[in-house]
Length: 300
Image (tube, rainbow, N blue to C red; front, side):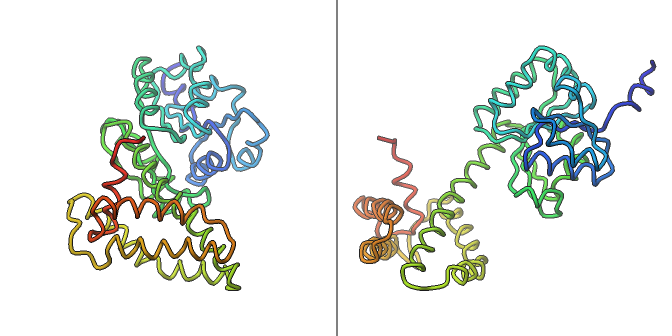
């Protein structure tokens, strides 16, 4: 069989992992009229995608062998490695392009990249900043780190997943690192929204209306996040519109309200403690972002 015949029989991309996100990735490729090979530990998850034209491989090695590009989106890097490190799968990967879109740490990204390089596998490490329903959107963001030539080769394929495909440079841990930074923000936001809902419930206010108000404030809150990033980057914490001491006093009143309303006070107590430490350290007249000075201290 000559190479042209062989290539004509290959699919364009293989997707390993068909959870909510992996299935969304595969569906976006199929909408783009690509030939897609699928594999998942639970084959039944592939059924809707097969109906759209996807082809289910009998095992992971066959899935990898079927395409020049292999996209992996499973629960974490440990799950990824448990699939890829099988002898038959690793052998099938040689000479392919592996795009890792599972969630992990920068250290795990660098280690998987080294494993791939040692086996003759081109590697890109990505992080998805979107929900499954947003995959394929013009503004959807996926961060991608890896060698520039490899990224450019994969870019037309990956832009079918995210119009906001963002190059993070060649340091393989960069995508995971920025994902972790965004997740840190989201963790505080999710907890804060829930505490705000407790406040509304305790005081007889509409939680739905509260959510709508936060949506209306999104532009202002986004500007504040940008401002905080600039302040921390430049170290210019002086002359704020609102001081860390003032904000700390307001947050202290959240603790008072929680006690009065007999609602959970874990979040405001934690936040008030951080602000109090920052004030005690002499940062009370500075920007709210001066909290970073407390957080930079070595952990106990």
